[in-house]
Length: 363
Image (cartoon, rainbow, N blue to C red; front, side, top):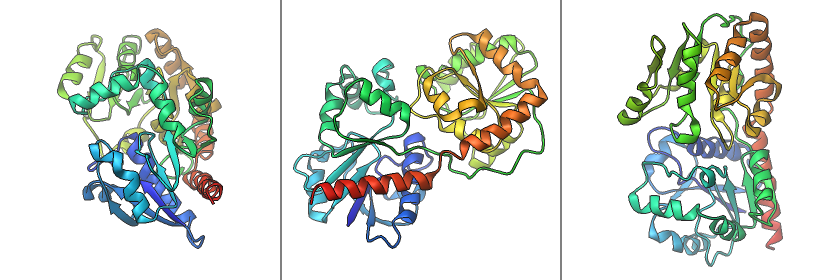
C-alpha cells in the first residue's frame, strides 16, 4: 500500500504547533509501518523542510497555498497513491482516485478570525472569508473519507457543529520528548513562570502580564519568538516593578532549562486545539497553571491548577497556590503520569488503523 503523508505545512527553520505535530507523527508512523507492507512517502514543497522531518522517502510537489493545489490530486493519482494523509484540512482533492484523510486541529478562527500575520495579504482575505461560516469547512471535510482530530475536544466540536458525517478518529498530539525522571528539586519557591506560545489575541498573554500586579517578586519568562511591535505593546502593560523577560525564541535546550527552574508553565488561552506546551511541561515534571477550558481539562486532568483566563486576580491567586511545597510536588508527579497518556506511538497506531480502514473501503 502506497501512503503519502502531506508534510507541506512543515516549517523550514523552526517548528510551530502544526509543523511539530506533522514531524513527530510522521516519525512515529514510519516506525509503526515497518514490516506491514505500508510504504510511506512524505510530500514536501521545499527541500529545506527536510531539516525538520525524519529521514524518509519524499516527493516535492507544489505549495499548499499555490494555485496548483487544484491539480494535486492528479499528481498523486499519477504517483500511484492508495491513501493520502494531510496534517491539515485544506488539501485539494478534485478527481482523486485514492483514500483521503484530513486533519482538524481546532475551530478557533471562527470565534477569533484574525489570520496569522505571516500570510500574504490575499491569503489573509481568503482566510477571513473561509471562516465567515462553516460551509467551506463542511465542503472540504465532505470530500475526505475520514477525519483525524488532534483531541477529543476538537472531535466533540466537529460533531457539535455538524461539520462532517465521515468517521472522526482522535490522532492525538503529544510531547516530543519522553517523560523525564522524577523531579528531585522542588521549585515552589522559585517564583518563576514560563509562557511558550504565539501572541494572537485568543492566547490572551495580556492577562498573564496583568496578573503580575498581584504577584510581587515573580518573574514571567516569555520564551517564544515575537515581533518588535507586539513586544512593545505587551511591554506597555507590564505593571510597575513587575519583571517580564522576553527571550525572543529559545532552543530546545534553553527551553528545557527555563522549565527546569520554573515554578510553573502558564497559559491563559481562551481557546486551544490541544496545548502542546502544557504536555511538554508536565512531561518534565513542571506544574501547570492554565485556563479553565475544556481542552486543558482533557490533557491535564487533575494535574493542573485552573483559573478564569479573563480575571488577572484569579490567575495570580491560582498561581500562588503553587508556592505550597506539598502541592507543587503532588502536581509535578501527577503531570508526569498524565503526560504519559499522550504518546506518539499510540497516535501512529491510530493513524495506521485509519489508513487500513480507508483503503479497505475503496477496494
